[in-house]
Length: 200
Image (tube, rainbow, N blue to C red; front, top):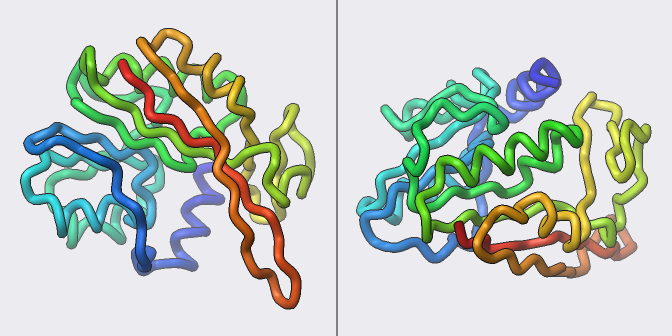
């Protein structure tokens, strides 16, 4: 799947723009963003939160090259399921629309890694598409609730219960579904994600 993501970023060379809601992060926190990709979350944090010690990881070399100039010295090429950091290295880890691109064993390994690198009392901010999303079932099924699209990128769709099970070793998990409507041409479609702020 790495080649598929490199192609994706080659065709989208500029970091994503637009408004994005930033998580509540304490001053001076060490913050890891997994799958920093096009910089949609990392770049606003770099620009607006100089008090944070930020680190971004992505397994796409092409994505990291696109961010390198604006995020010097904080980027690492790595897989979220095998993070190159010591235990309890971070106060918070951001994981938005990352685990949905992994198969079952990869999702489990990644959840274990996120819990490992977060300090006790730290936070993991998770977001992934829900089975209630209008695009659920689109593409070729590769696993239950996981579908590969024509570009070679797979999408897994979560339930709140599944997210709770993935992070069951955490002190507290409170997954919930958030829905909204999105215009697609002349029609409107339901979008849905599972969000969770996980207490390590």
